[in-house]
Image 1 (tube, helix red, strand yellow):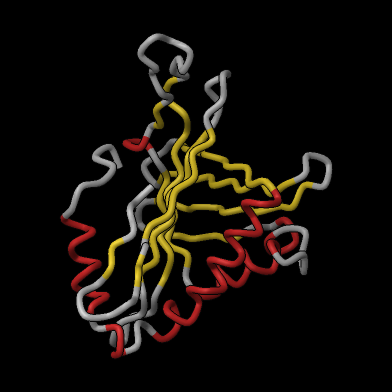
Image 2 (image 1 turned 180 degrees about the horizontal axis):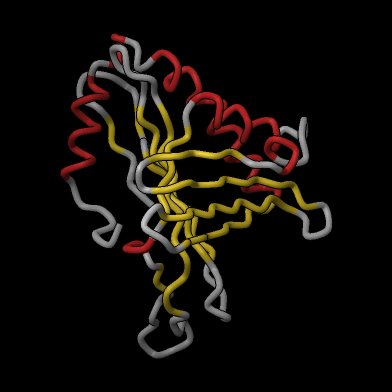
Length: 193
């Protein structure tokens, strides 16, 4: 996860990126990263969501622990705009059991078609996010992530908090945000991401 950075001249603390890592001993886990990109000028804001499957199991009990890794080089990245985020919030808030009643969201580009699904699972006790991409050149990649109820509650609160930034951008009173955001992009971080 990224460290918080305080912008110069204001008390605003920012953290434009967030990550959750769910490794397991079977090697079938996954990791999720989300980055908020606020609206600016005529450009709508969004959340960039990156999902990677687990690459290695690791060995945490070894004398020198080896931590699990994730296949970020083959991750799936999707842009979640205003309407997409509203669909996520409807599921997290319990207004719907799944996005678009199980049909999911579809994003198309010259690279291919991506289906994004989010479903509340009472049997398992959480939320299942699936992303499937059919490549225009042939082939398919997919990844899934499971949110516990408590993670879904926290993510719901985070998404609620950023919706005004996605819609309207960063108010002028927080002008240090842009400088701090650029520092984050150039600073130390997850080199594998």
